[in-house]
Image 1 (cartoon, rainbow, N blue to C red):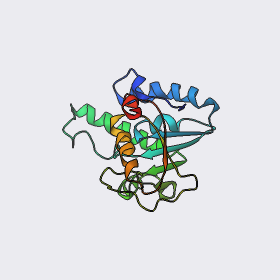
Image 2: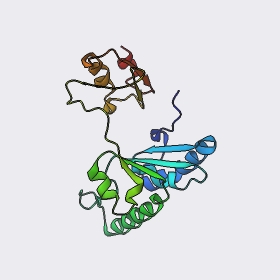
Image 3: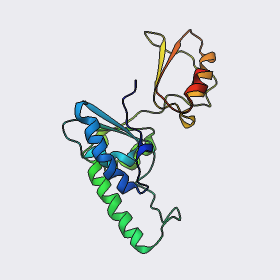
Amino acid sequence: DPDYLDRNYLKFKRLDLKNLESRWKIKKFAEDKDVIHCYGPKFAPAVATLRKVKKVVTLNNYKFFYPRSVLGMEKNPKSKVYRTFHDTTCRFLMKRIDNFIALSTPIKEQYSRFLQEQNIQVVPNMYEPGFSRFTGLETCEKELLYVGMIIERKGVEDLVEAMDNINEEYSLRIVGDGHKLDDVKE
């Protein structure tokens, strides 16, 4: 069974309040853990406050690089001041994270502006729906493993369909839960 916290159970809408709320949940969750992995930088500030646990964050977007005003979402001048303070604080807290996984070199380059570059490793997503065939896969056990939420945006159904295109006989093990679980099983 996966051992994870789902951000969808948080009651606050504002990200700063979500980080405060999630901080207490993450702290309790992390009590018996050696490593905490946060997928995405949104909750990295909350994870960064943990002590006595290794912290890893996947950098999968540019959350701290595009101000709301650029996106046309800034409501008033006070909002701009708040946003600047919030993002600066988050960037400071993120320096407490042990390691980062960037999904691309451009993401690594952007985050290297305020994080230590040697703490950021580029590990691209393994599967791209545009690939028509997998060839030359090497593994000892001939088993592919997917671990994560089983929801549409993760592409698990595409992965199941792609199994028909693998030249060798590999098995696929899926570990996780989500609203697409029944569709994937089918």
